[in-house]
Amino acid sequence: MPGNVMLNELAEFSTECGTDEHLKGGGVNSSAKNKTPMLIKPSGTSLRKLEPDDFLPVDRGMVRKLYDIDPPEDTARRETLVRQILVKAVLDGRKERPSVETPLHESIDYRYVMHTHPVLVNGMTCSQKGGEACNRLFPGAMWCDRPEAGYRLCMNLRGKLSEYKQATGKQPEVIFLKNHGLIVSSDSTVRMRQLHADVMDILRQEYAKAGVTDRLVTGDAADSVRTDAETAEIKKLLGDHAACVVSSVSFEVVEGPITPDHIVYSKSFPYVGELDNRLLDEFRSTHGYAPNVIKTSAGVYGVGPDTRSAELALELAVDGAQVNQLAGAFGGLDYLAAETAAFFDNWEAETYRLNVLTR
Image 1 (cartoon, rainbow, N blue to C red):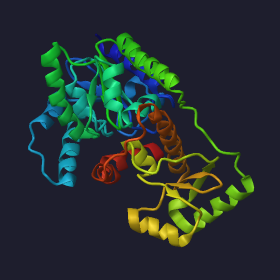
Image 2 (cartoon, rainbow, N blue to C red):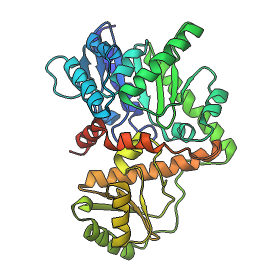
Image 3 (spheres, one colour):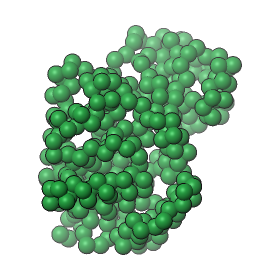
Image 4 (cartoon, rainbow, N blue to C red):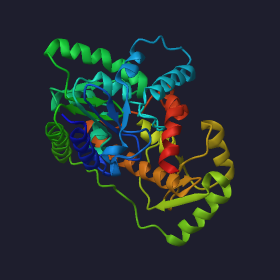
C-alpha cells in the first residue's frame, strides 16, 4: 500500500478516536507499519487534529534493539536508555519524540494499531472484576493484568502475544490493559474501526444492564460567590503552583491512583476538605507535591501553573469520577499499587508529554 494512502487512513481513524469519549489529554497513540519505517504519533501530541504529515517515521530495526538490551535495574537509568534508543530511531531529521509505546506497536503483527483510553473501557479495566468481565464479554480478546506503560508494558506483552499466537495461530486484535486502556489492531482500518465500535457497544449494553452511567453525577449548582472566593484562596495558599484555577460543581472525586493519565494530569491523590493552610502543608508533606485537584463542599477545582494544566487536572478528575461510576458494574474500583503509582508520578516520559501538551 502506498505510504500516503496508509497515512491518510491512519490520520482519519486517529481523528475519529480523538474525542472526549476515547481519550483525555495526550496519552493515546496510533501507528501504521509498511515494510519500513513505522509511522507513529509523536509523544505528547493529541489525536484530535493529527494530519498525515504529523506522524513520525521511525527505524523499525532500531526499535527492535530494545528487545535485546539488558536494561539497568535502576528505573531512571533504564528509562534514559530506552529514551535514547527511541530518539535515535527517528528518521528524516525530525526532532519530536516518538510515543513511549513505540516498542509495543512494533511487537504487534498487524499493520495498524490504535491505543485509546475510553472511559467506557476503563470502567472495566479499573475495576476489581475487570479480568472476569473481559473473559465473559470479549472471549477472543487478551487481558493484560499488569498495569504498566512504555517499555515495561511492551516487554510484558511480548510474551503474552507470543503465547496467544502459538495457541491460536495469530495475535489478538483486541487487548485490554488493566488500569490503562484498550488496543485494537488490524491490517485494515475498516476492520479496526469495527472492532473499536463493537467494544464500545458491548460495554454500553453491559452498563445499561447494571444500571450505571458514564454521565457525571453532580451535586447542586455551585455558589459562584463562594467558588470565586475559594479560587482566590487557593491561589493565595498554593502560590505559583495555582497560578490558574478552574472550578466545577461538586462531584465525587476518585481518592487514589487509577490510570497513568489520571496520575500525570491530576496526580495520584486529590486534596479533599475545606481550605486550610496547615492541612495543605500536611498533604504536601505526605505526598511530596501540591494538589492538582481540590474538592471542598462548594465544588471541585483544577489547579495548575497555567490554564491548560488546570483544565487538564479538572478534566481527568471528571473522567476519574465517571470511571468510578462505571466500575460499579464490575465490583468497584481497583486502585493502582503505590509502587506503580510512584513510577508514573516520577516518569520523565510522562513529564515530557505533559509539557508538550501544555506549551
